[in-house]
Image (tube, rainbow, N blue to C red; front, side, top):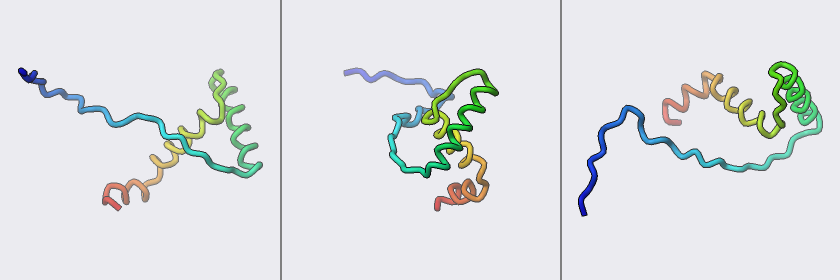
Length: 77
């Protein structure tokens, strides 16, 4: 069978994007705070988003802004 020659692309192969489901328990106060945040988000952007959609973005933003964490990840620890 003849093998196709694939040109070298600028875009590398995309990483695995399969969502991973996790389950956590949170305090009632944290739940109220997240609900309040979702309400403010809706007021700010005119687009309602359920808490379960906002939390992953909040976690990603937090991790991306933590310089010590980023430094340790670059070091391979």
